Image (tube, rainbow, N blue to C red; front, side, top):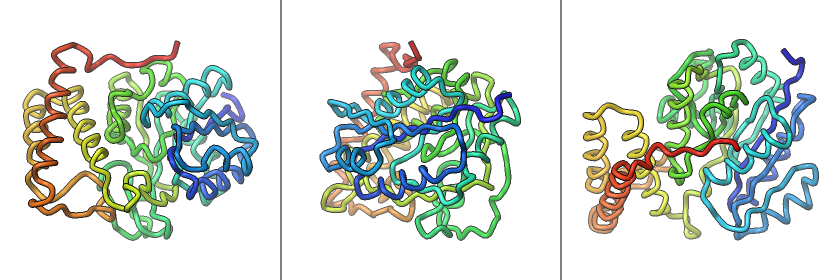
Length: 312
């Protein structure tokens, strides 16, 4: 075992100039002696690229020429981490996260190094106040609760939230990259399930935390929920269901997606949830739902649902 395995931190950025200072500033304060930071900018319309060049010259910046979606941007960073930097571990995180403990990365490495079968490690994600849970390891578990140490444990779980995924090189080489058919939503769920199917463990370490400032990229300029991302969440949920669940659960998934067009809710975290009125949202939601159901059905029929991207 290496004393200090090489870790490369990859961050997919879009329109994140308002949150990058906290994110990159906190990462540069880590006490781990062997790590590198890569930021992949997904053709941001704001000043993200200039901001990084000016304030964080030590960051390896990849400025994409076209916006290919979150998973594509994340994959570009992961590829460079493995091929150019020969990373032993890749830590993929969001641009609106902040690390508060300088030994954070050291503890992640210790967790992963405890067992070679550990493919992914996740942590507890707290809101900016450092007290309120956004998620424990995935979904709504713990959301809105005050952190009193009730989730400070280490546990093997089905998957962890994509806000921060610490991934072993051997896992990436075996199962490939994030699936670009996911625009934004359920890509992390899918990756965790793929890891477990390949024989790796997914571990949640609640003794390690990260702050998640908020999902700023999931709203429009007017501060309203982005309908395109509502569609991407439905799309991702269906792809995940068709790929990993039993046949009767696939039927349930289709019914659920169509049902989302009728009831007043969506897939955003509860603290950011905004209710739609039926009069304003029903037709649009039902249209989106019908489109994503048809799209996933066509992917399945054409045999492209399980086409994945691997390292070359």
